[in-house]
Each structure stands twice: as C-alpha cells, then as structure tokens.
Image (cartoon, rainbow, N blue to C red):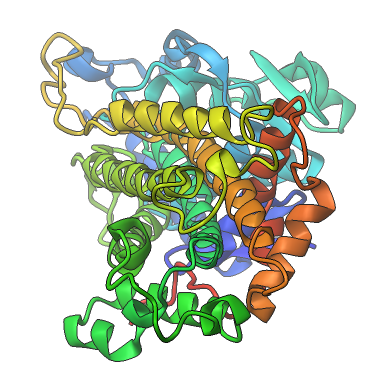
Length: 513
C-alpha cells in the first residue's frame, strides 16, 4: 500500500511506518505545481546575468567563482561526484528509506527549485526498492549532510552503488533493470539534493522509534520486576503523579497500574509487609521512565517539524526571490538526538538496577541468589546481570552530548557545525544496548515471578510472561545463555513483548497533552 506524503503535515506515525515498512512512498499530487513553479524560477535565473549561489556560482568558499551558463549541468554533476566522500559502514535500508522519504517531503514544499522529474525518480526508486548505498560517516551536520546525501544523489545520476532486495549492485544497472533512466541534473538540483538535514533527521527518527519501543517494553519488564521483588504498587497511585503534573510521569504510572492490576502476588503482601519503602529502582519508575518519555516526546516534536522542513539552500521564496539562509544547520536535530541519548541511557540505568536487585538475595525478598534453582552448582543469571551492567556503562559513555562539539570546515566558511549526524547515528548502538538490557530484565523478572508460584502475577503481565516463555524456556539449570539473551533483546526490538499486552495500555509518542 502506497504512503502518500502531504509536505508540512507528515506525522510521526507515518514516518515510523516508512521506517518499518517497504513499498511505494509518493508525494500528494497537489504539490506538483509549486515544485514546477520553483523549478521554472531557477531556470530563469540560470539563463540570466545575476549571480545566485549554487545556481551559477561555485560552492562554499568557492561561491565567488562565476559559472558560465553552458557549464551549469556539469557544475551540478561535479558537485555530486566530488562530495561522495562518505566512509564507514553503509546505513541500514530502513534508514535509507526514511532519508529518501524526508527528502521527498522537503522538495515537495516547492522551495527547492528542482524539476518534478527529480521527485518522480525518488518515488520510483522507493517503489522498486532501489536504495542507495550511503556510508554512515562524513557529515558534520551543517551545510547539510553533504557527503551521505551525495551518495544518494549519485545513485540518481547512475553513479555509485545501490541495494535491491539486499543485493549490492551498480546504480546505473539497477535503474536500467527497472526501466528507469538516470537523471541529468539541471541548475541547483544537485545542491538541493545534498544540502539538507535528511540523513541526520532520519537517523534521529530511527533512534527515537527504537528508544520509544524500548521505553514501552521497560514499563512491562519494570512491572514484572516489581511483582518478582514483591514490591509495592502504592507509589503508582494516580494522585501522587497528578500532584506533580508531568505528563510522562502520569502516563508511566497509569501503565504500571494497568500492568499490575489483579496480581495475586501484590495482594499477598498488602498488609503486614515489614518493608516500608521499596528501593528507588522500583518505587521511582514513573518519575524516571516518565521523565524519559517526556524527553522522547519533546524530541519527537522537534524531529516531526524537521522532517517536514525545507532545509536546503538557497530557497525560492513565495514572491520569487531566491535567497541564501542557513536552514541546513542541523542544530535542532543535534539537540534532539542528545535528548534521546540521555533518555536511552537513563531507561537502561534504572532497568539495570532492577536486574541487580532481583539477583541479590539480600534485596530480592526471598528469591534465591542469581535466581538459580540450585545456587552454587548453578550460577543462574549471575553473568547476565554483569552483561547488563556492561551495556549500561557503554551507553553512559556514549551519552555525552554531541551538540556541544563543533569544528570549522570549508576553509572557515562553515565555522560552526552541529555534529547532528554522528550524534544521531550513535543512537543505533545505544538502542541496541538498551534492547539488550531490557531483554535481560525480561528474563530476570520472568524467572523471579515464577519463584512466587503458586501466586500469579496480573492478567496483563501473564500475557507478557507467556510471550517470553514462548521463545525462551525457564532457567532450571545452567545452559549456554547467549542465545537466550539474543532472543530476549529481539523481543524488545521487534515489539513482540509490548504487543503481548493489551493495546492502549502503554503510552505512545504522540499521546502528550
């Protein structure tokens, strides 16, 4: 089914569907006239005598060099080829789809001056699954994501490499196989394609979607851990959180109450419990995970705006002026990526403390050491907890803000940059680490709840536990554990853990009041 984009109004839900899906993505046809009108204005300028940056001049520090009308097409081709300086591992296909889709949205606003053929080729490539091979490194997040976007544009002119159904091949060959012709770039078109924040934005959006899925799963595993530790649900009382007022905290507490509803384990110690208060990793889940949810939602609002933005330069304005500005500077994306990184770090940190609590017999209220059936002969989840600590520590190291760094480039013409691209790219590894931590908590909490037999947890958590046990057997005696940890992390990443509980129980990214 085709996804139709309405530039300026594309939602996070639609963007996530593009990221997680496949198949055609097209612009709303109503935006074609504005695209064509801006292209006509650029063609007019290209044939005239006035110097306009990027149309009939060089680029960056070479902007003072005038380009003859007969060399305009060569200028744009040279721009693309010279800027294909990306290094490192290629970006995953879902992120490349998102890059291409957000470029479509940006071009669709009708301020970039590209011909409709440019838009149509991107649409056709998405429809046929022709995805440019884009190296992940080489952008400083200002003047656009020049190097990685050049690799995208190179595929459109028949240069470089693409992937089709996971197979790497020459771009020109892939286009021909699917009845498509490489485009010959007209004035400003190469610049419009590479001067934008779409790579940084797509990477940050991918990090956001992955982080939110992990945060939702952490509410499920946190509730399981609460029951496994025979913790109190009293700190999740609605009024406590309304008195503070943070929406994320309120939503997290609501989810925890719903998850723990009907728990026999909780009912068994409502009265006479010698413990007055639980440790913070149990008691303060709404405050920590809720604050992280608020950060993710704030970042989501920023990234939704950016995904709908025009971020190339110069721009064709509504009155026909073509003016240079700085929309290519990705500072909003860099700051949003830093917010996501902090949230990812904190969600993992508090989850790891719950794992540590459950494997420690001094804290777990009667559970055996390391949740082993025969501790001593068996080590149980001893080293799984160590692994979770290692992943948590990695994320702490990577959570340092990227946005506070800058370095001058392009002979000091571009003297302040955002570092948005690598700030957003690190979210792939950080969220993978978080999947691992939350997956280990799922194993640990499920094992702990089973030790409370014959008492049962609540209806919703029984569903989650059944989902876990459908992939990973209970740990009755020591076995090779790496496969269990991988399977648990996969359950968090693919959404099967959160899908196990009732729809509407867990907070969404776009729920903010």
